[in-house]
Image (cartoon, rainbow, N blue to C red; front, side, top):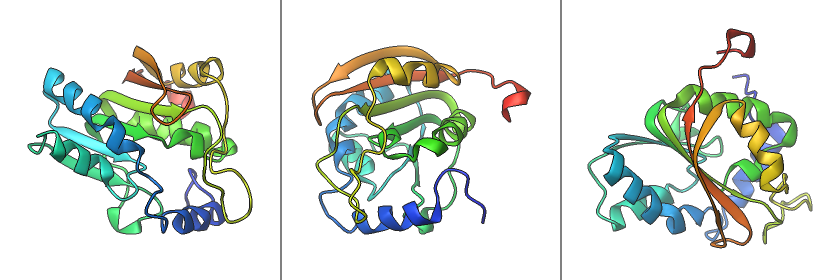
Length: 185
């Protein structure tokens, strides 16, 4: 399969990192916010893009949200299959881990599977974890002013909030824009 969103070499790096039980836990901190959003909007389907060990599902169940269809996607977990469209697409603590040269493809893919809303969190500084090749696990360490033009190419920003949950970061609620056919939509 040809993947445009992650290189084979970086996929191996991610599979190694996911062996660490403390890697991929950010969604537990954001689950109460996502749960409130689900209650407010009544969305029935949630796609967890970069699901890791499916901690978002655990966190949502802990807040009493269990009457949703949950679609995990993570290239490090082949058994999850391909990304699936949903009313709400969550991408929590993922975008800063994307290879910079592949970010455009990831944002395009996110826009294609987001039917109504997206909930994205982005950490803007270095990660505590290091890849096995010595690089910081956050391949993109940029401020919100860098992220917003990239995100608004594909999404309308409905809400943006800074957070200190995992250090310096933001979380946003978005709606997809109609993608011009010249961009692959």
